[in-house]
Amino acid sequence: MSSTLISSWQNRRSAFNHDWLKNKYLNRLNAFLERLNMPDSDPLRLSRFLTDDFSEWKKQQGKVKDLLETFEVEMSPKSLFKKEPLNRCDDETITWLGQLIHALWLARYPIKEWVHTAWNAFCDVNDQYNNIAEVLKSKKLNWESKDYRTALKLMIPYFLQFKKACEELSRVMAMFPHRILVA
Image 1 (tube, rainbow, N blue to C red):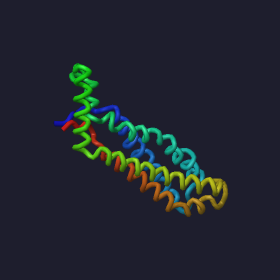
Image 2: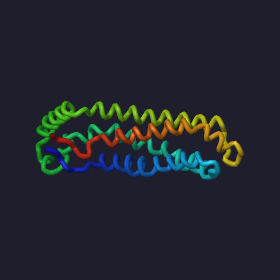
Image 3: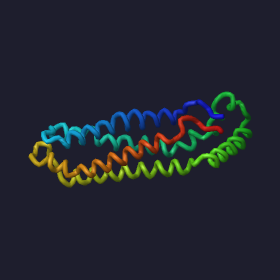
Image 4: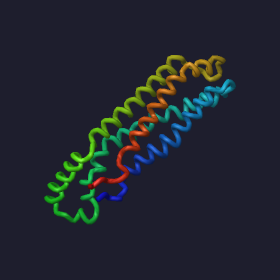
């Protein structure tokens, strides 16, 4: 038996992974890479991606950390004791039965593995992002210079690695359960 309750965690995960990462960020990254491969790409549009879109990753990091740090607590079937009708149980029952249910959940599902794998994917995205940011900072690129596109084209392998890391994070985040598992 499994619950069909959608948790706040699930909504936050969906907003990050589906709405932002897959449908916004990766789409813009792909458009940037396509533009970068064009011989007459507009340097201003390339620059706008780097200043407006690429840097959004930094703003999203806290959301990913929060998701990974709260998964076990929020998605444990123990959390169902906060909702009707289980919230009517006495405190002693909620404590011992909640702990038992949580322990069984941890034994039945690879919860720690899922979180560990997601942390690794998250760290890889951060590493790739920081590598690109450092290279961009060291080059001090100006979109108005004639070498701008050429310098960015040399960075295509970095952007492809970053894209691959983002796709892996998205894949891993999608593997988390879509509901609170109680079976």
